[in-house]
Length: 174
Image 1 (cartoon, helix red, strand yellow):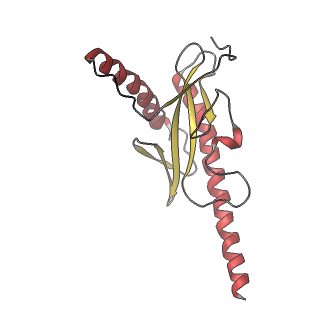
Image 2: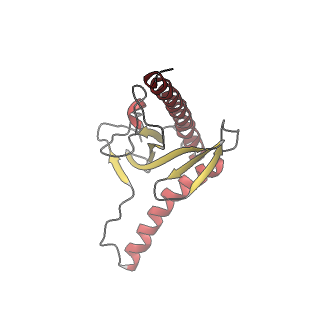
Image 3: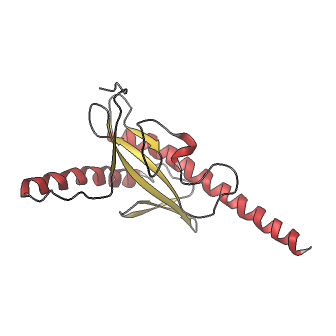
């Protein structure tokens, strides 16, 4: 085998693993979107969307654009980020939580960017993500409680980075 053939073979294996990684993260993200919404218990079932991990977003599912790497083409093999937009009002106010996922051994590490990490089995077991749903919910709820506490204490002048909000004027969820 020539060096070029060896290089091509190695890169093909690398890309096969990158495709596997993307598929696993994509599957996890879809399960998290549906599972977190059910966990939160919105009566209309519209409470979590897959959105890009950074930049401006609207309250809609973005499909392939919700992930930090493309679904096709040459993909890096490593951690993948995606955004979960959580509806935080009866109207059209949404907050993005960015999740980073990476495979370590036979486990997936899912982490809220800037928060705790959780280990999930591959493939997911039935109740595997439940504690992570609690963690995401608590993370969002605690952010608001912290802002309330800061306001009530008179210490709310700074703006903390960590969450992005979206409000769609055309969205008619009530």
